[in-house]
Image (cartoon, rainbow, N blue to C red; front, side):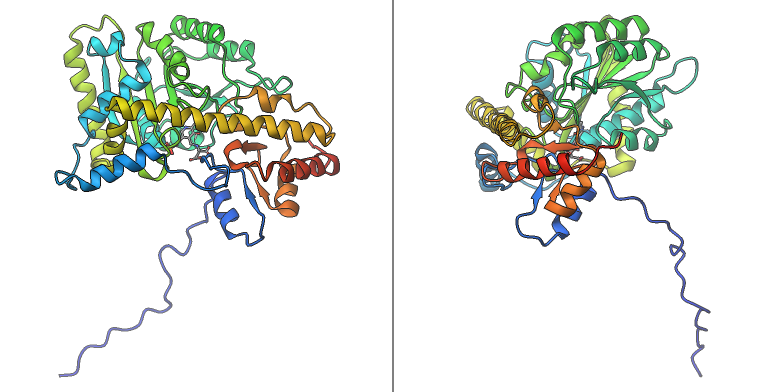
Length: 429
Ligand code: PLA
């Protein structure tokens, strides 16, 4: 019997043929363009990843040792973690940001889940708020600063809350925080709105509120009944001191209000690709039956995670526990962290000095006044494009430089190129 022939389809067109191409990511897309550039001497100042003074990725020695111990330990296996991650990690991570003597933790008001780094914590946290935070029956509005980390603008609508609203943050003239406008915008936000705050080392501006300004922000947050969501991606990278960089979060926690925290160990432990971070929901002081409420919150965080990625990866969590949970390792980590922050500070001083020595038009003091991983140079999108095409120096189009991308031997080259761009590309606002 002759086999039935399947008639060939008329023309092989995929159902996906009409999928429109998405725009490249402004930060990670830039990294792909950099890798594709074959010019010798190209320089990447785009993504915020620490580099040594030789321009190499850095594995912290304490991290390497903990990894070796994990590999040698016969008890290490590759079973699934619980949906909300490693319990020891949850506790140590919350203590790192909130402090060991935190009243909210002692009162059982903090619910922490392991997360896929800072981004995963934000995504799960905003989804949880979209499901359970209601004011006048509606889901909340989410406010993010202008400018902010570009991915905040993706996460909020993806979590089902529509486009984020913005509050003014930067004083473009001084390069510092425009506290008056910020407070005015927060005062206008509807009650129950979620306010995304950068705990320290604001990305991209490198400008943080002063301790007195944080108190003013807290006052408005309380008066207006707003929900602060602290994004902590750089604890330890602003000042080099983990406690100093957590001061804003601890001030709000001590006020006994509801709040949400995301944490990332990408930068401060150099665990970028391990995707290790945490999400904490802090319940207000005085919440009746707090144990019941905390248990319910945890169950709902797990209900967000389970259908999305089931459970988090184990390796990064075990490394973080090995560092945070051992006093000798912890002390060593603090030193390494101060060293990384110190190198970034040195690059700030060196770049400003080289720009000044070159007689580059403009006031470059903001480079040394800003803190954290980035410098918000004030270079225009056109000047940034010129630096890329003519000098093969890559930075985000908003003029942000990842300071750790600079080295002692490339600072002069970058300063020379910046002078060329400033003098030869007219800035258009
Ligand atoms: N929040 C802020 C403010 C960030 O700057 C970043 C990372 C994250 C969260 C998330 O980091 P994680 O998920 O890796 O923990 N920002 C980087 C990288 C360093 C990026 O864009 O993903 C940046 O270059 O801005």
